[in-house]
Length: 258
Image (tube, rainbow, N blue to C red; front, side, top):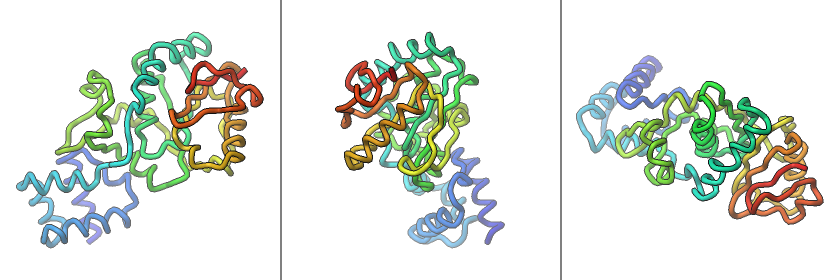
């Protein structure tokens, strides 16, 4: 059976460019076995034949693996500001080798959006994003890099065309972009923060935290940033006491370390 699954992974990659190694094998096999049973097929080899021959089954399979909760370029007007003002400002201040941290990155839409946004200003091989989340499972999904149509709806068309491949009803992000992101498990309330960051992005996460926990995290973000480094937060959040914790407010979503 192990041999069969190794064969299956290779065949799936050949058909879809989806790398099933990005998931924990036990969990992924369990999910795929459920799908195979649903289609009344016996064995991975026969399911591969079904995937090749039956478009509906192929699309069902890809859709089954697609991330449904993420969204690229969430709040596009803020990403437009990032493109026109924030990134040029950071480059003029710190150079092109920026240290960027995507905190609580969930299923990868945010760090991958950052790579694409930066790619308009910096060669891809000079971009590295640290991306962290408390949940190992969502990190595995992020590494898979497979998203549904709604998730990528706000990606600028030129970037979508350049960096995504249509796989059935879904979109696979390119290895060029994936390779620029380093994923790691991290607990915002417990673990050590990276230091001397130029840009930290943490959006629509802290709304679930208590006021005390939010304050603690915002203070730690400030400590993690270089002087004049920038914090980008979500449209559902604001830092009421930003002056007290050593930030200047650039606008409602971007804060600069004093």
